[in-house]
Length: 204
Image 1: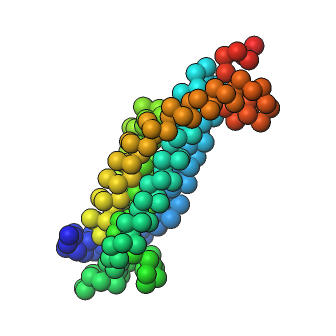
Image 2: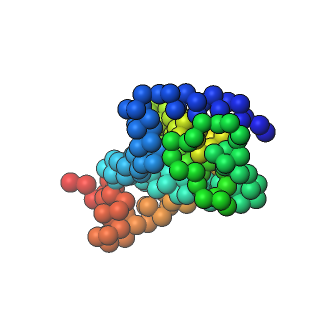
């Protein structure tokens, strides 16, 4: 797959973009995944206050599925061994960020896989979050090309891989985690009840 032409076009536009836009993309691409982490925490905290164990199970399954997507992305990356475009594409504009070290392969984009998985997992946990999570995932993927460290096909593959794995993993994990959540609530243990929420039997 060759998306070097599109890579050149995007990185050329990045280099000619205003300084504030370059800085915004640099910050987002480096730290934007933390926002998904905060959303995971918010969804879990919200789920603790709901009566059924399924909400907590979905909230717990979301980061687990995202971690699975990251592992899968790393496995594919180590098998494909695609050089980063910031070293491989002749005549391209200099990247906004330092090119990753040799051996840190390009395909697929880990950031995009994590963002894609997180967006799908969050949407499965709280449907209305899809309106925010999906555009944020796409923005994360685009930012990896904009700063010059990935090809467009890297980030597209990452989004699809992460999203597909999350769509499969979250439903598969929800049943077992729901059973564990109900058992933890029934145990009455302080730590267990704090983590899962009190459940309907222990509410005032």
